[in-house]
Image (cartoon, rainbow, N blue to C red; front, side, top):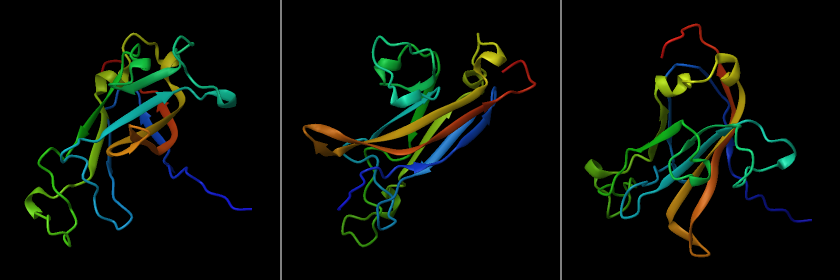
Length: 176
């Protein structure tokens, strides 16, 4: 029997401390090892969601109990109720060009880096208004890459690239 697997996401478990700054930088590359241009004419976007594990394949939908969401990136309107926003920063911009030195369009000074950074300040990571035992624990997360240069059924391609456990450990400091 033939089989195809469209799940190309990689697992990376994350552990961090409540009240410490959080910064995760990724470099996206194509199958040849060349950084992907996340800028150029169409800026790429990313979604990240950190939530309590969902049992039995249950998904969070509009109007459902969404108390288990710890943090989300901007643009995820469904999860806008969360007070913690994950900031996404692209190193590439509208002036970035291909990073492939074999290309006629390659310009070293404007070559794409393929770097994206996800961050939350130490204040956000303190989760103000929450008691330590209410917020410290085991969560799950995933990161989705939205590629505006590939359209599927009229929409930009969305592909989960990273997922895993997100452990938020306690910290002895009481002030952010």
